[in-house]
Length: 361
Image (tube, rainbow, N blue to C red; front, side, top):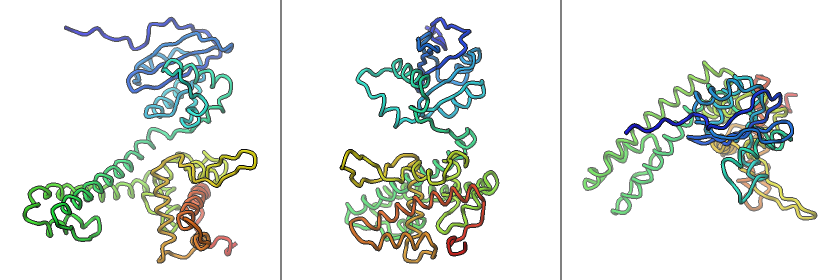
């Protein structure tokens, strides 16, 4: 029996002709719910539509210029770009900020859509709007995320092999990750080779694929994003970190001050001050976790004993030498925050990097 076709748009009469409309959209993976309010704050339309480009174009193509608010999510990048091409003002709300101000025990897709519309109508700054990267930048960033996924899978497979052999009374030889499969295959006991041989083969194949990703990322930075070349002059910054930094931020004009980049990546301390109580807290961990982890790795590379001397390295070593609990970790985070500010400044100016800028000045 043939199933009846579903309507792309809910059968709710829509009022056209409004000069100023504010639309809140609660994005879903299959269906997205919307709520439209007028200048007086009255709900004039609500319903749902399929989360597909065809459905969005069908519903919004005849809607007059409106302010559209939605929550940041998986589909918000391409939907916001499509709505902007149709001539609408799009506001993508910060998820962390929105949850903090709209926590309620009466939650539903319809209620969330109406809240978004009302917040956007009164004051869009309440939603702490974020700037999305373009679809082309997102596609390039997918290459980096695919590589990160491959690295996690390889790490999980290597740990599994080591754990399974220890349970049988054996121990795999110490080796660098790229050489693990080859060295382990040679040292694998006969009784375990049949079971773990295919796993080692998969590890070797993943290592080759990761090298291919590295070459593609390097080529992409040189051809499509040449501005990353200025970032590579900083000791400890490689092609992966430079391209991830540029693609994650999206636009160098996004921040008025380079110092705001550290806050955006969650590398600033949290604060919970009340009266005389102002405790020292850890970092916020907001923003992109993968880029933050890359910057932490670069900071560790800068502060290692064989690191190349620079003003940034000396400053970080001075912080670590103060002693105290977790002094080394705090110094690494501080260097990572300064590194983010430095990379953004070099991205803007495209000036040559000087390890001792103050001395040269």
